[in-house]
Length: 213
Image 1 (cartoon, rainbow, N blue to C red):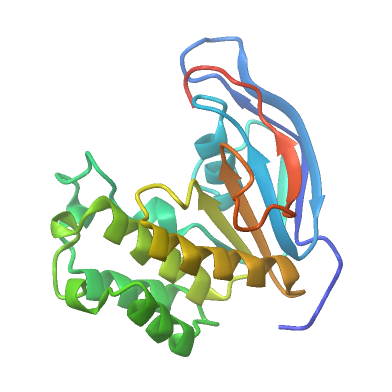
Image 2 (cartoon, rainbow, N blue to C red):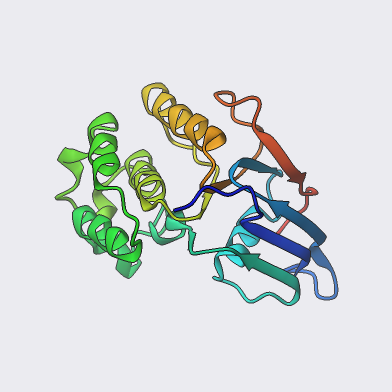
């Protein structure tokens, strides 16, 4: 992928209707021209973090405004069932098979990085298990591994530190520091605060607080 400083993601007047309050908006008029590196979207519970990332990934229809991505968008976290989703069809999939599917979805898949992260996050013993047997932390690490190894032009992460222990958080700190400094991808992270491991990460904008994200 060639190095570039041109925008990889453009949001133009992006708005999302409130899911529980007809006629009101969860957020309105978001504008962003984001080049490569790491950017953070801040917001509390119900502010619209999940909705925003789903709109960027094309998992929800845009009803007002527009999203322009310069290449494929990786939102692998959206494909891993988390706590409360054990009954979903995806929860019965073997972790290794899910990971192989992620590799097939991303032409630039970095197998060497994936192998290093399996070791760093001690996931090898969990790969033969169905996803519903994995802890919340292991499921999150699997999704983060796929996100990092995808090498997609745009990588989306939501509250990536949740359910991670200290050692696992340190590995994520290193990944985000690399994302901040490289010039080929945009990593857009939605969270409650700027990650302590990368305190100089650029804040794209802050979403207002409100119920119903």
